[in-house]
Image (cartoon, rainbow, N blue to C red; front, side, top):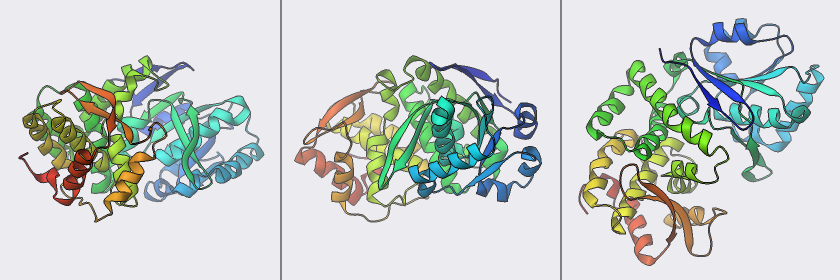
Length: 358
């Protein structure tokens, strides 16, 4: 098992613990604490009922509709009606949607209350559990409301990875990969072996999760509100988000980010920022993440439209993270010239993400 650690937030110091969640929750839960639980977790892990017995529980359907501002209001009403007070905590047991809902409510309820997070999927365990961010939907507009409100404690139990589908494992590995590349991984072959092994070996997967968090934590402390240096952790995300949107989210988030990183590397090579050989040496690692998840056909104009809708963009330019080499990512403005658009179109149309030549 891995050593617990602490993250220093502007709000407070919080703890990340690697342990069996039931015994840890039993020690931490207090009378009056309110549980927000992913209903799928309740169905799969029925022993969770014993841990939360005696507490008020709201079961979350992990969907975008659950994150609507309207539904958030309904949950707040239930919490208040339960007799919840300033001294009580919210407890989130679930994935990213459960995390967003709980963190957002904790940030505004009674001018801010404490909360505990038990992340139950790989993406939340390896990434979003630290960093403080929350975001919810307003009307037809996704992720337009939110803020920063970290939990008091994070309890990571790798038992939950046993029930994850291959797509979810791949998505989590894709999310972790951007931390390893931004950090300047020294041995690509060794990392490639670990990625392949992690698909079936929980100990290797746990090692990668721990490594991912150890890279992210110092940057969160340096730039908690994502105003500067932490921007490099968006490597692959602008292109990845556009791919998700263009395919109606048929491609899992972390897998889309893996494609986005390869595209960022390819564009960086096209602009002369890196040698094509470096892009080609990284490509097999990324292929090992998406190899079993194909991209459905989509209209390239939908990709460009989604890419251009980022609120940070101006005119025919987009804000992206490109690279000058491993560990040397930077935020820049990319003019969407015909050459760049043709390269992106060919990347998807001609499957350049499988090609090892320029």
